[in-house]
Image (tube, rainbow, N blue to C red; front, side, top):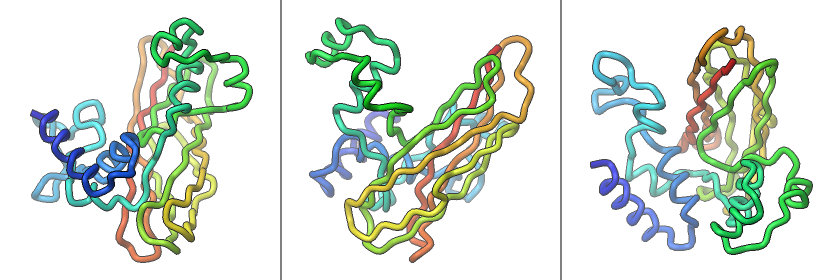
Amino acid sequence: MACPHVSGITALVRSAHPSWSPAAVRSAIMTTADVVDHYGKPIMDGRDRAGLFAIGAGHVNPTKAMDPGLVYDIEPNDYITHLCTLGYSHLEIFTIAHRNTNCNETLHRNNNFSLNYPSISIAFKQNSTRVMIQRKLTNVGTPNSTYAAQVVAPRGVKVSVTPAVLTFKEETESKSFQVRFKSTKRMAVQGSATGEGYLIWKDTSKGKYRVRSPISVSWTS
């Protein structure tokens, strides 16, 4: 029953903010989701605490989604670049987007590109201990607001955010930041291992907003 509920919330958010892109609406819903139940306790999956692969970003909160403070927006061209990073061929991209694309030129213009998604998922492959991703936040809350990064790092990973403080003077102003991950854990000899954490941008000006992004980390041999 999640789909009709989320569809209804999406319609409510879009009616309140008709100029927002689908990506901005999705971000508002994801980054304001609750990770505790109505008793204020962690959401459970049976007898265990629910993980990211069970609850995703959390339990949707329609009231908070209407006023998220910040959003992770995505431009249409970003999806084309994302397809290039995934190794899609010219023909495959044309079939999807009906657009001629030169991935070599696209990736050259967008070095270290990562899709501006409101959650973060990274993989440490064999002999890899460091990963860096970039994100961009757009202010849809109040002007002259400042946000500070708070990280709960996955076990076995050190996480740093640069810059750790973002100040938005105007509404619709955008600021970019980088998140660096360093694995401090020995990779599993067989199979894979995973870790979970989250990044929160906390409004330090008025204390009104908490923009939360789940983090998923995996190690593969």
